[in-house]
Each structure stands twice: as structure tokens, then as C-alpha cells.
Length: 187
Image (cartoon, rainbow, N blue to C red; front, top):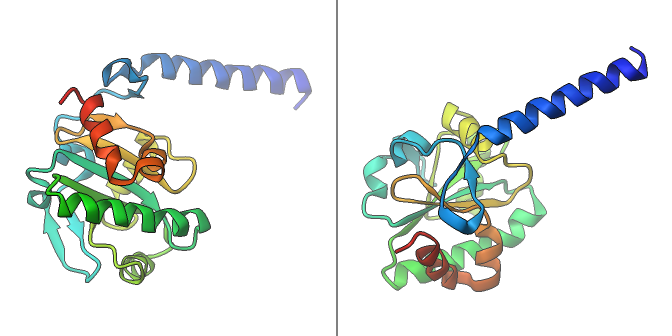
């Protein structure tokens, strides 16, 4: 393929990407969060079945009454994840102790379900995980255009995006990030 033909195809791909981006609906007000049409419910967004570190499963009712859910894209083999996971765990514990309605749902980037459970066990992760490698895991990764891990996306109880920068917020403020999420969500 000659260069001009390749360039035309590249420009066409860029134009298609820009067109797709222009179809996105702004969600969340002035904070600049762009996402596809908001989900009908939290269950539509993240599913209805989750796992705990011990391999037991729970349903969507485990998220009832939670004001915010952090969707945590991570892997135990990732050095940055290894550095951030204890920070998130500390903030999570502080929020639980303070009675704040917050939960984390892991989207694992491990190579197997067993590796996901090992990660959860080794780090003592008390939160939930979407089924490894399932449809919801892939859909969430695509929806939030996850390009690196760790990534923490915070959604409200309806599944609407509150923050795409949860990692940075937790790293900077720990459990104090919760107050920022309340402010961003208008609550």
C-alpha cells in the first residue's frame, strides 16, 4: 500500500473516531465527563453477580444502599496497582468505619479467574469482583476506555459516572475523596 492510500485510510479512521466521540452524551454536568447514554440501572452497568475473595458469590443486593461504587480496574502483577491497591484499601476501610455507603467492584486484568482470587486473597480485598473475563468485564473496559491500570471509575447508585479520576482523588485525599464525589453528584 502506498503512503497516500495509507494516509487516506488513517484519516478516515480518525474521522470515524471523531464522529463517534461527537455522539457521546455529556453526563455529570460541568465536570467534563463524557460517556455513552447512561445505563438504565446499576445492574445494567455492572451486572447482577459478583464474587468475593473466598470464591463465594453474591448478587446485586450487595450494592443496595451504596451511594457510590468504585469500579476498580487492576491486576496484582502491575507495579502501579500494587502501589495503589493499599491506598484504596485504606480509604475503603476508613469509609466503612465512618459509615459511608461506598463499595468497590474489581474488574480484574489477571490471566485467569484463579489469579484474580489470588490477588484478592493476597491483598485482603474485602470488596466484590465481576466474573473474570465475562461480558461485563469487557463491556466496562470498553465503556470507560480503560487504557492503563489501575483505573478507578466512581459511579452513583444509578450507574451514572461521578468521576473518571477516582485513582488520583483517592491517592491525593484518601477517604476525603468521598466528599468530592458527593459534591460532584449534586448531593
